Amino acid sequence: MKKLFALLLLITSVSVLAEELETPSYNVTIQSNCAEGEVSCDDVSYTGINKKSGKSIILKGSTWHTLCADGVTPCRFLGYKFKNGDVIYTVSEEGILEVVKKGNKVLFSEQGNWR
Image 1 (cartoon, rainbow, N blue to C red):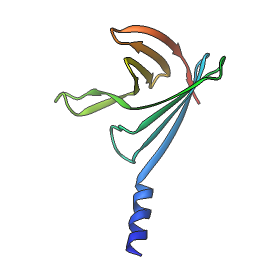
Image 2 (image 1 turned 90 degrees about the horizontal axis):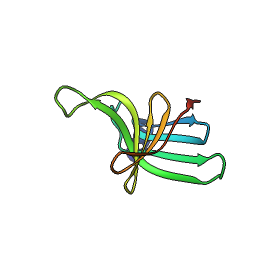
Image 3 (image 1 turned 45 degrees about the vertical axis):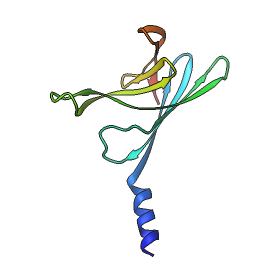
Image 4 (image 1 turned 120 degrees about the vertical axis):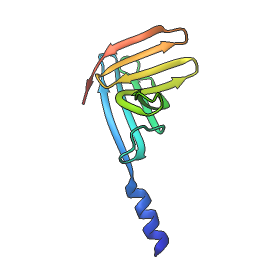
């Protein structure tokens, strides 16, 4: 009985948050699998579907924050970051999907709306 209670407690302490962003070219689903109340999360997934081709990509990433005055503690939430080789996908809190290659070359940037 104690094992069952511990398992139920663990399951209820992890919050699965899914958000959807729609841009003119992509439908993006962001899913966070972290404990409720955590400021930052390293277990976030990105599923992006190209509206024209139907192709999709799934990436793992984390939340993205400014740092507090101590240079370590996460402060203001900015959005999410995902890495695919030398390409970084960012999804901002304002709904901007941006894809940047190493060297800060912007490959794609588009404003979307959270649904």
